Image (cartoon, rainbow, N blue to C red; front, side):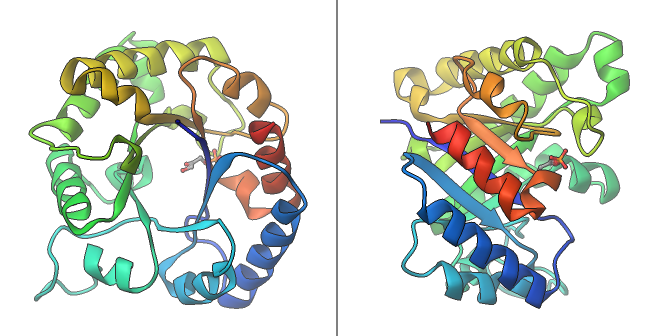
Amino acid sequence: MKRNMIAGNWKMNMLRHEASELTQNIISGVAALTHDIDILLAPPYTSLDIVRELLNNTEIKLAAQDVFWEDRGAYTGEISPAMLIDAGCEWTIIGHSERRGILGETDSVVRKKIKASLEDGLNVIVCVGETLEQREEGKTIQIVTSQVESALKDLELNDMASFVIAYEPIWAIGTGKNATPEEAEHVHATIREITGNIFGQDSELIRIIYGGSVNVDNIEELINMDNIDGALIGGAGLNADSFVSIVKIAGE
Ligand code: 13P
């Protein structure tokens, strides 16, 4: 059975004491709910240990926001899949548009990171999405298709549930604008078709989640779409009440 997923990407926010407080409030908020949903928190590296400790004995999973593709060696500043697993992460985000855009991460770098993570047993959320300019030029499907095909190239996927694709239109991230549920569904259905062509029927178990200004007011309509299996939350995930409300609505 495929479970919907709600993941909070904290980006470069939260000092350790803030991360601790937010995590505790999320844990107690979620504990009061009955839900059947995977919940992930992706704090910055500097708070992974603190959040890990708080999440012990809960069902909430820990995720990193990025990873490197080698296991060890002379790569100053980088963190390997093995190190993330050692720090208690089960998941990592890869290829977020902020990394692609600000740090110049290419499709081939994204592919190396996916491969290295899965090989080490770290589950992956890979992000794809078009810019506003690309959308206005009518290139959304073309761009997303090429990002997804590149991410999946030569990939051996033994466990479809360990691989999540997040569609995050760049123009909707942190802007308060979001794709209409129909616009998002159209792209998700295209992604579903690509994964189906590559992995066959089992690929139904790959979750395709939506990100970009998701909040308590729009989650319900989004999650009700056939091919939207959850959400990757930025800003609204920095507030425990709104994150917990999103989990509640998505999990009902
Ligand atoms: P916002 O929810 O702040 O738009 O961020 C979305 C995002 O980038 C999640 O990874």
